[in-house]
Image (cartoon, rainbow, N blue to C red; front, side, top):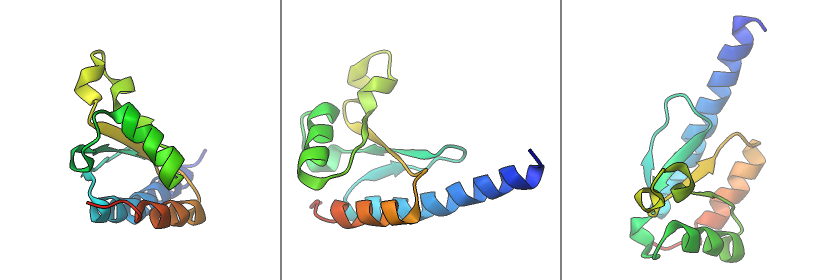
Length: 107
């Protein structure tokens, strides 16, 4: 593939990242801003759930947004128990729908 293809791909991811992160921060997530990935890790401490698995189930069932539990990325799952990962390699319409649903969360 030509270099312009990869530049366009990277620019698209940056735009999607910059579309999602402000919404996440607005509703109470602390975000770990990625520089070269299509996902963002977030801290969920502000939501007072016991762990990431409990919070993940809540998001899917009550909010309608799927995330990946942070504990799945650590050798010791306890290290990620207050984190979840959002992927932003989605269409703008999908990100907008997720943003609308996430706004149901309270800080």
